[in-house]
Length: 151
Image (cartoon, rainbow, N blue to C red; front, side):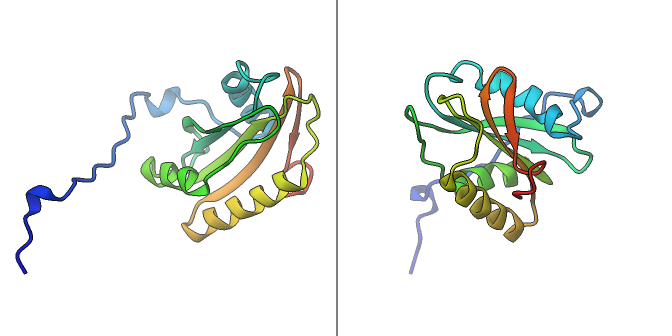
């Protein structure tokens, strides 16, 4: 069977690293992650749910932040494959998940706990560690799954 390779789509994977390693923020605590992720979430904080993933290298330096889902007032659909795809693309060692609760409560829902466990399992399967999942409720209120022993 002869295959015409010009009719097969080309797949490219790219990551443009334009920030020097020495200039990247280092995340050591949930507060460090919150300071970064709260900026990403500030436009949607009280309006609708969004989910962001923060990707870190082996030295816990920030490689980047990516919006992985935008949803409605009280929920959003998260495709774990998008989180993992980006983690592999940037060669991340660690990731931290974050989303907001427009309700003002940072308490994790049963769905939040299930999602976090599924993402943790997916990360483990490809050699990446899910360090935390932050739920941001307002400008100064968040819950860390790691700090609460939920991870």
